[in-house]
Image (cartoon, rainbow, N blue to C red):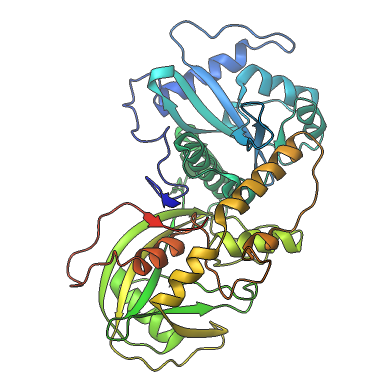
Length: 438
């Protein structure tokens, strides 16, 4: 079976491909004015139709970084796999749910996400982390707040609608986390206030009024290649689960180019000098690792995504992973033990074999069933580590991040020999990898 993604996970957001002009009813400014009118017209117990010439509003609640979700199974076959959906609720329902908890929903608590012109709908996100009484009420309607990393693993990557919903959730999560982290001005210390329907903030101090925009931190991630011996350099961090290997990566420092960051990070972490650097693709990566509750959480994280920081809440709401192939000029490895536990050259044959036996689709189905049970209130425990054994039940010799991580596509693209050989022109291909025996 082949894994062919039209875009990386968390990319390809279907509701923010274009920002409407200010005079458009679906634009942030126009929608925000309509939103205020809506909120004033919503009574406490009943729902009224929207004002004339106003778009519909749908709201996605988040609690502690977890989006509201539901799950359904289409068909009557016992082998049918459930699929999750974002838990959009109408603006009146959102206001009434919060009203029952004693909270007044205001326009400044909602963040503009985007719109769909064909449906005349504007989408918003709201953080309800402080309202624990919402959980049982929404649970009665078979909604559940689910970790974004769990939804990522549960997503069927062949389903473009599901991939679009994952991108929406990632975008919303990043914006809400940024709002939580930017409550005060970094220049003068005064409180900030939302502007432009939550798309930016501004210092409330009249003598400051500093504008603050959502933060994105670029990270280079690279597969280092030994052309002469047909090998790739893979590293292990001490917090990786046993047998897992991935690409090297690191944050870009002020004053350096992307290519310079690739060369510096490779030399610092593994002592390898890099010459040519070839672009592959990029991936938005929302902060997924604020809370670790169990060994299974670690498995979900480490198997399906590249790890930058998994200990405690992050101050980085969203990274942009920029992927490269890097061609080695030296081959002797000198590992910086503060950065990596180990780094080794691996032959193409060994990497292809590891890709072939890892049952990523099986793990996706397992997690989709877990989300379905959570939404129905009947969650059952199961270790996902079993999904990375070969058919005989033996442990796989090595494995890599799953298909939702850019590292997977760098590794699998090289393993399947779809890599630029001259190191001059950057590859503009969308992520596409072939994995057999899934």
